[in-house]
Image (tube, rainbow, N blue to C red; front, side):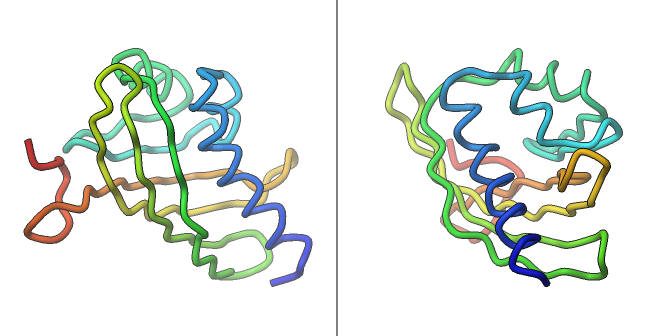
Length: 131
């Protein structure tokens, strides 16, 4: 992986967190390809409209993303695995998760094509956090 690609992917994943922290849904959606899929809470949301729908029901808060492990498959495809701690703005509730991403190079730079979020729970990883 070139240093430029590594920096671009890490910046994309940082932008993912920061846009959510400041309630910039359009900026967050721009981190994804138009046909992206996002799997969380046992559901899969598809495309930019699906992502906007998902965010319409999501609480706001702080997204603390750990450094990703990025592996480039070829010149235009990579994967990333990253951890995240979410602190809900209203209640202070904390949830920790692992994200598995598929990334693609587009005309606009690297974007997320697929994301799966699994929560870190007492038994390991799960599609839903412990309640």
